Amino acid sequence: MRWGVGVLATACLLAGVVTAPAHAARALPADRFTNSVGVNTHVMFHDTPYKDLDATLTALQWLGVRQVRDGVSAPPPPRGTWYRREQHRRFVALSRAGVRLDLIVGGPDQDGDTLDARIGLIRAIPGVRSVEGPNEWDRNGGDGWAATLPDLQRRLDAAIDADPILQVRGVEVVGPSFGTLENAAQVGDLSDAFDLGNLHSYSGGRQPEQAEVQGAQALPDRLKLIRGLNGSRPTVITETGFHNADRSNRMPATPEDVAAVYTLRTVLENARLGVRRTYLYELFDSYSDPIDVNAEAQFGLFDHDRQPKPAAAALRALLRATRDGGASPAGRTLAVKATGAEDLRMLVLAKSRGRFAVVVWRAVPLYDPDLRQDLEVGEQEVTVALGKRFGAVRARRPAELDDPQERWSDTDTVKLGVGGAPVVLELTPGPGGSGLPSAAGKTEIRVKLPFL
Image (cartoon, rainbow, N blue to C red; front, side, top):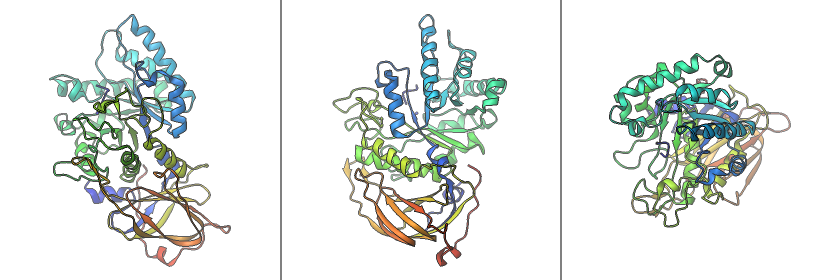
């Protein structure tokens, strides 16, 4: 983007979920899911809405997003001296506000902008969580990109390994990204030079869970393809999203209401498949685009005037519904059986004090980007057997502005209408605790998950 962007059954099992109607899962800790959601920013783009740092912080806090991806390159002196000081000021302000940063650091040495200078800046920013190799070097690195990329990545990895301060902080190294995923095969296995693999994954305006047209790749296929570069390293998706420039002839546009649903399903599906973190592209619309022709200008969760689009409101509601007020437990299991639709997806999240959040949605397209037409998707009645009795169950619908809430009490089974938008079931144990296992829960097979 503007920085220069196992088989299915195995992947689903690794997420603790299968695509058949019966589900049994070791629940993902809820705070691990909410911390997996990040967003791209460009805080040094002073001709964009990011110029106002206070507004950027306000937007992040309103969303409830704590993870940000940005970059640290600088122009030559004398402007570079001021630029680096301003970078430091802005990233430190984000750090002090509780934001954790993934910063693109890899790249060639240039006049006044060397790897040593960038590492020095990283060392002075307390909120840096990870540093990233070259961004889409297959597009930005010239004809010899494949020959230069391994050395750039290994130099970055060695610099982090050699820095005792960054080692104590646990700063991780993220691998390089590719503008065209198939180009990763020209580099080969680089997993010795990073801790986390990197993937840019745009669905081209289509639903995030699976390919809808011949030649398009579903996310499990992309994860499998990048394995040749990443080896067995965990993966972060550092760019993904949807733009709203309806007259653009670049990537197909997605209407704002559909983008809201697809954005939620993107972060949920990625977490379901074991992706460590997902950075949505991007926080603000970068530029004013009144005639809707510039795709690059309209990827924001907020518009150019910093007002939230439906995707921002929906993401905020999802994070509020899934966030845990305590320390989310690891290793908890909840047997769940869902019936009523073959295209169901589910993510089970464990919260403190015996609570769970079960997110259910259907992997169905809501929009045809070729015909530029909405697709009618009705709700299907889904029965969710919870595996044990809960004192209170509440259904939240974060993609709907009025968020209608359905409630049940003292139950182990709920019936609800599910369409293409996610529904969050908030499960709270009764006064006596989590209750006895129900008959439905006794027959479920539990799936052992790796530590994510």
